[in-house]
Each structure stands twice: as C-alpha cells, then as structure tokens.
Image (cartoon, rainbow, N blue to C red; front, top):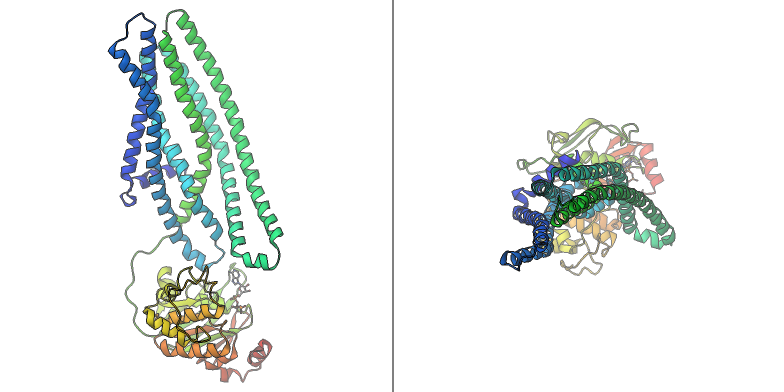
Length: 576
Ligand SMILES: Nc1ncnc2c1ncn2[C@@H]1O[C@H](COP(=O)(O)OP(=O)(O)OP(=O)(O)O)[C@@H](O)[C@H]1O
C-alpha cells in the first residue's frame, strides 16, 4: 500500500460514521480555516499599519481597528492550535482503538494456533499506534492541505500587492525547499522500516523477559538477561542515531537553501524600497509571508521524514489486518449429542518437509473415550490439534459426523470440537469468571459444587468464586487450574472434547475421579485424551498408539497389551 493510499484510507476512517468522530473532523477543519485566515491576514494588516504610520496622518478609528485585528491574529493562533489538538486526539484515539481491535481479531486466532506468532511485536504495534497516527493525522493530513491553501492565498495577495517577480522568486524558493524535503523523506523511508523493526524486536525481547521472570530470577541470570536486552536496545539506538544524523544533514541543506533565497529576495526588496518601487509595508509583508511559509514547511519537512516511520508502522498494521478475513455468518445450530470422528490418512509437517504425523487413519466412535499414547515427540499433540482443526492436514481429512472439518470456517470449528491444551492460561480475573468462561453454560452454584466435588481445596471447603486468580492463574496450583478447567467443561455442550494432557497436573486418584466424572457428565461428548498415564489408557474404550508420527496400532488397552512394542513402550515410560 502506497503512502498516498494509506492516507486516503485514514481519511476514509476519519469520516466513517461508525467511529463517531465526524464532528471532531469538522471542528478541526474549521479551526484550520480560521488559522489560515489569521496567518494570511496578519502580515497584510501589519503592512497597512506600517504604510499608514509612514504618513503624517492622525490616529483614526480604522487604524485602531487594524491594531486590534493584528493583535488578534497573533494571539488567536494558540487557541486554534489547541482546538486542532483536541480534535486530533479524539480522532486518533478512535482510529487507534478501532485498528487495535481489528489487529487483535486478525492475530488472536493465529497466535492461538502458533504460540510464537509475534505476541511481543503485536504489543509494540498496538502501543505505538496512537503516536504514529498522531504524526500522520496531525502532522501530515491536518497540516498539508491547510499549508497548500495558505500558500495559494499568500501568492494571490503577493501578486496583488507587489511586482510579480517576487511571487516567482518565492515560488522557486518554496519549490526548491520542497524538493530537498522530499528527497530527504525518500531517503528516510527505508531507515524508518529498519527502525520500526528494531523497536518491535526490543518490545518482543522485553515482553519475553517479563513472561519469563521466574525463569530468570530463579536461575540467577538477571545480569545476562539485562545485558541481552541492552544489546537489543543498543541496536535500536544505533538505528535511531542513523535516522537523526540524516535529519540533521537534511536540515543543514535546507538552511543553506533558505538563507540563499532570503538573501536574494530581501536584497531585491531593499533595493526596490530604496528606489521607491516598494513601500516599507511591502517589505514587511514579503518577509512575513516568506517566514510564515518557509518555517511551517521546515516543520512539515521534519514531520514528513518522521512520518516515514509512522507510515511504515501503520502500513504493517493494515497488512496484518487485511490478511485476515472473518466469516461473518453464524452457522446453524449443531445437532446435539456426541460425534463420530473419522481420520482419513492424515499427514502433517510443520515445515512442509519433515512429517511429524504420517498417514493416520482411524475411527473414533461417538460417545467413546479414546486416548492417544506414545513417546515424547511421537506426534500426539500435533495429531490432537489436527483433529481439532487448529492445524490443517497436508494430506487426508478429519470427518466429524459426516462434516469435513477443513470445510468449516476456522472460527466455527470449536463448535464441533473443543481443544483444551496442557498449559491452560487463565485470565487475571476472578475464579468464577474463568470457570464460567464460554462455552460453559453453567451457573455459579453448580460451578462451586463441581469444584468442591473435584476436591479443589484439600479440606473440601467451598471455593469463593470472586477470588482473583492472579496473572495467568499464578494464584492457583497447577492441579487447581486443571480442575477449574474440568469443572468449566462439564457444562459445555460440544460434540467432541479433546484434552491434551489437560489432567497431567492432577494426582492419579484425582485424575481417575475427574475423568470418571467428566465421562458421566459429558455423555453428550466424544472424549479424546492425550496422556502419558497407563491407568487412563486402561479406562479408555479405545487406545491409539503412535510411534514416530504413525499409528502403530489401535484397540483396547487389554488387546494392545498382547503386543510387545506396546508393553515395552509402557515399560520404558515407567507408567505401567
Ligand atoms: N509449532 C511447531 N513447530 C515446529 N515443530 C513442532 C511444533 N510443535 C511440535 N513440533 C514438532 O513436532 C513433533 C511432534 O511434537 P508433538 O508435540 O506433537 O509431540 P507429542 O507426542 O505431543 O510430545 P510430548 O509427549 O512431549 O508432548 C516434535 O518433533 C516437535 O518438535
């Protein structure tokens, strides 16, 4: 997306009824109009004042009015600027909020499927959105058009008041200045992209560090980690230094061009004043217009270069949003009851080359309890995520009650199959809010009773649902987090439920009891469990034994126990 297309899109957002900031746009534009009027009228009034004062005339009412108006043009500029700032802030906040929501909607599903998908970078992007938008809207959009109008009006005044040669010279000076600015902005563009990448790396590095605070502190590695963060910060500083050096060199070229042009113009004007071809008022008008146009242009040039970074950042945000399409329609309600799952020759490789799941075919009967077992890295979790539709197989298909899962839009697949990972993140909200999180359809008292039945507390007291669980659920033990999840799922109506080692933190007795309870309460679901525990395999109707991504054999634990490889696996796993 070009910078121009980006600005056009932002302009469309500014007047989009949905964001509710049309009045702010109107107020800002009105403020700009008044600002232009003040900037053009001020020098003109001053010229008339000086010309009148050059003549021996008495103090008159028009002179007093001219003085008052001139004072007003000088003093009102601050008020106009404040008005513009107010409008801009409202517009920026509305657009930043909207873009942040769109970005979250686009990235959350991807982050859920691939946990390393740019969490830190996303945070950095969302944090910098208001700053970048401010630069673009207040700096570019808001100033570019008024500056152009101001220049056009000033030219008309100059043409009407002084000889045309001055308008030509001022035009050349401004054109040269703009050219230098544009070249500078162009050069700054690619630096801006690198600088943004460095900033995002630093945010990602700090977010990673904060997430891993216990790992750092418990291992006494704070100094090394801070040094690593300092290294990344140093890279960002180096890039920022490169950018500002380029800004300073461009400002020096601009300064030389302006000095040369001003010397030429004012020298010519002084000569004409001495020869009585211009009045002193004309000279003042000329210098005021030149300074009033060149100085904002100088700031505008600076903004243009700074805006390079903002354009690069918002362009990236837009690209992330545009790559994501949500399916708007809500599908029909699913039939009640457990579903039969058929795996038809599923294969998968994360990198498209090394297959971690190979040609797995199996039938999981409706309402059964099926477990996936195998050594570490044998592909159990990957297969579970393929069955849940979180990953799409490179070959083969998953059929749930006759529906091919790949044909179901991603955001509706959880209605067919619900996947619960081993490490369940909790919100930093209350126990009740986490326990009643959708698709749980329970009420508070039932949740409390279920938690109590799962022995949430060793003394079996009733859990307080308004108790905060802490960030990520750190206020609970690993087993309590999993019990909370199991209590929540007991009231979720879903045809297939996959628990990927989601009972691994429970002691064997609690785990057996929890699965029995789940099976009893979840008669409406087919349950698939990934486990390393033999006693769970013994409880299952069906065991799928994976070796190196392939299905070695399937059946009841009792039947499979006739096989040496299955027995050896449990023997090695010390789970028997
Ligand atoms: N996101 C990923 N990107 C690349 N490779 C991955 C990814 N997730 C898993 N793998 C690889 O896929 C293989 C199977 O991993 P998987 O997690 O499915 O095994 P598992 O049987 O569940 O292991 P465990 O019992 O240790 O949980 C492993 O070699 C692993 O390194």
